[in-house]
Image 1 (tube, rainbow, N blue to C red):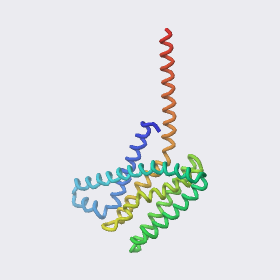
Image 2 (image 1 turned 180 degrees about the vertical axis):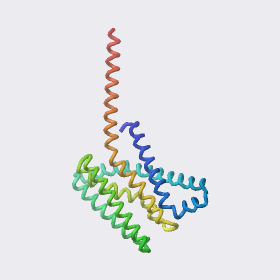
Image 3 (image 1 turned 45 degrees about the horizontal axis):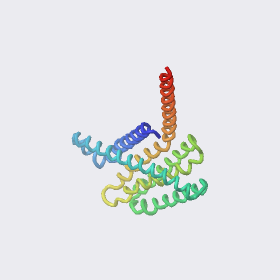
Image 4 (image 1 turned 30 degrees about the vertical axis):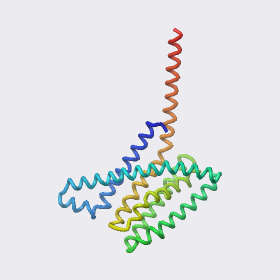
Length: 227
């Protein structure tokens, strides 16, 4: 990918993370924070709270992008170690099963003390898996069917790794933060998987145009020197 296209890729993913966290945060934390500020007419504090959520989303987007490029390296290492894509896919499926089991038994179960929390964590897990499957489906449809398992692995395992700090918090209103932080990771991760081929293809086109311009300038220079 060229620097120009990488900057576009980075900025759009960054803005996506900020927008999702800011807008969703208004709903998730409305009862905790924003309703009180709204009813009291504290518009400066209201705006400051919204901006703070956007900044958190921008940070989550940066973390997501770092993890994405880290996964590309891990994926290549896995291919080299297990030699075949089929074997590496089975390993990825095993890791997916372990991560989902860990989420249920060691992350969600200890915090689900009420029926509402059981429904909340069950819904978040369903959203995680559903989004991962849909993203992997379109990734395989738009690129190569062999990318399905890798995309599923990234959307479930890597998203969970990014989400883990929120899941490990034991004090405060953790339910709202666990809910809020899942969605920017899902949005940015899905965006990166689905649009990366577009930017890679555009980079190839840009490099080809650059080579053509260089060849044209070289030919013009040679013609001018002969005159």
